[in-house]
Length: 256
Image (tube, rainbow, N blue to C red; front, side, top):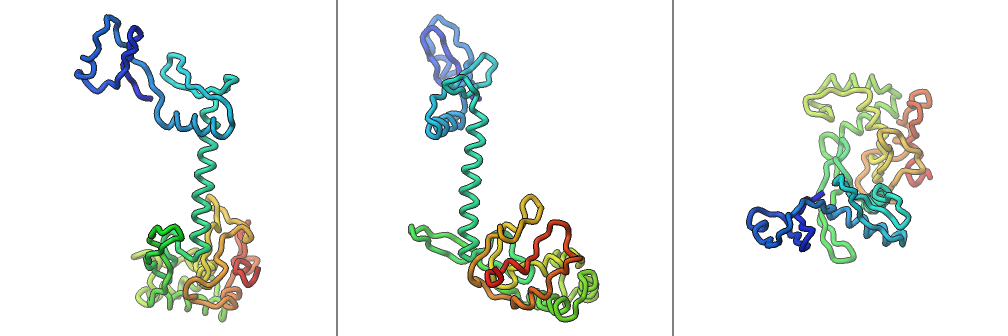
């Protein structure tokens, strides 16, 4: 809330910015402090009246907390906030979906790739910087070796991690000065981006999402490190799946 000086006698109410503003008052009445609702409160009021068609007023009960009230006297401030949050979330997700389906990378690149910044012009003539994936010459070879050990030799994730840790110079870990773990190997094996497709929204709040709800690009948008047949053969067996996990081998457009 914004506090302003207000005179009940003459209606004087400029913003209080110091002694100079206070000196402009020439009424015998004593200015009192009044609470003005913030700009975003008025914005929510406009949004609410535009969506629902009800009249909304801003009231102050003397406690300094303004409330948005509709024609029936119901408080609607939190309802407007929720509606505003839903709308902004929907728009942000739609923008993410369009980027992924166009083949652009969102967030840090996966192990084995690096992000290449390119300038793209949209249909409206706006120029944007986008990221596409290109193979990294050293780590891409490590990814290919992991899939060979997994698909051709049938090694478990812990065994593959042990082999990678035996030669840190040839097989650098995903984190600097770190070590390979079975979880890190599994994350690489189950990442469908290595087949050349962009994939997004595989998890929500850390929990796996069904494959049919994933957002994927229809075509191969970057150079694949493994073919889809090798990728499917390397996937975890049913006994190795954690509870609720989806099978990444079913995510490729050719398998759908």
